[in-house]
Image (cartoon, rainbow, N blue to C red; front, side):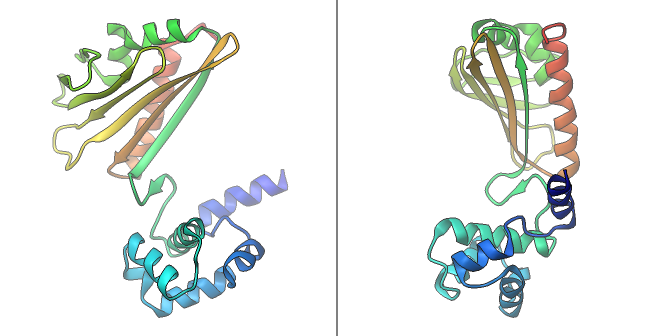
Length: 213
C-alpha cells in the first residue's frame, strides 16, 4: 500500500516515474543530473522531438526507449506534460469493462442504433463500412476508418470548432465466457475534455451493459 501511494503521489507531483538508480544504470546520469543537463541546454523551451535529438546526439543516450523515457521524465518534472498527455496523440483516455457476454453479443449491442446513440451521441447513425462519413445533431462529424466485426472499430470524431479530429477505437477481447470491452480516444484537445470523455465512456458502458455484471 505504501508503494502504491508513493507512486500515485509521484505522478501527481510531476516527478519522473522511473527510479534514480534505474536511469543512472541505463544512461549514466540520475534524474537530477539529467534535469540540470537539459535545463542548461534550454530544453524547457524545446519540443519533445528536439529533446530526444539532443539526448541522442549530445547526451550519449543510444537506446530509443531511454531517449523517450528521459524526455518524458523531464517534461513531467518541468510541468510540460500532464497526466494523460502524450507527444504523439495529444490527450488520450482509455476505459475498459469486462462483461459476462460473448464477443458477438457485445458487438451487436455496441453497433445497434441504441448502442451507437449511447457512446457516440444523440442522432448518430453509423454505416459500418470503411470510409463512411457521419454527422450527429450537435454538429459533430467523422468517418469510419476500420471495421472488423466482433473485434474492433475505429472512427474519427470532430465536434464543431475543433482544430483536428479525435480518434475513437473500440476493441473486444474474449476472456473465456466473458469479453473485455475497451474504449480508447486520442487527439483530445485538453485535460478537461479527457476527464469528460472518461466519464462519458464509463457511463456508456454501464448503460449498454447494465445488469450484465
